[in-house]
Image (tube, rainbow, N blue to C red; front, side):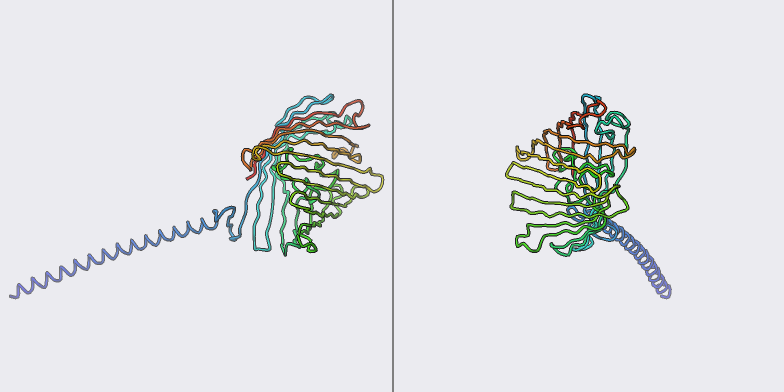
Length: 398
């Protein structure tokens, strides 16, 4: 009997120990599975956080480190041009490739930061006006130049539709073409000739405002179709000074918008006062752009003047556009940037072209321009200045 009891006790003890061992093994395996599950959950959370913080949260929105909304975009433009004339060598050059990047950070409903940088590879045309006193003695495409430039960068405070202020730098609100400056939007590559600026000579106006820019809609009109701009800037011709400018525009109706602009600043000698008038008309498929600007210089400096008209027509559901243009430029108080040799010019520029927009964000252009110099500025030392240009370009916005 004792033997039977001992066997039973031994069996119970053995079963209990085996059961405990199995329970401990199961518990260990469960703990391991739970730990693995926690690790997987942690990795999943990290992926979700990364996706939330650094990837797209919605259309045209990105969340950076500080979790503010960011809009990102830009443009690319590339072109080929051929020039030739009586005293201009026939030259064809793929002379410009530009990538612009735009970034906007929205901090709140009232504050945002806007910036635009341009990375440029170009073979610029030297001695543009074929001045035989300069080097090279005739207009000529030069070696490759490349670099990255800051074109816009400002913090904007939006108080109301009547009052907004930007601090930094940006495109001057002078007329239509100075304000626009986005290559994709121009029918003609580079836009009207009046906006060309070498950073030293002020042909019509300084192209960038610097410091402060105030703008808004005038509160005195119930329809809110009248707007204003006021800004400060430093001209390239007098970098130790601060000038100012402004614009007043009126959207007369859904078809017609008109504006007037002014700018005042210092030059190496004296000062200048620029004023302009502009008109933008759109009716169904027809359109018309026109601007006039004059610059009154103090002292012995000669006044400058420029204007252009550009009627255009859209067809085939706005996939095609044809235009003609006529421009006049006179800048007799002009000097070469490097040598300071006088380089005055007066000319008429006439041409036409076609745009193809296969999709709304892509524009292919083919254009022709005739540069016809006038009066005593048509030749210098018996060297003619007139020339023709044929341009092919593509611009993509994204």
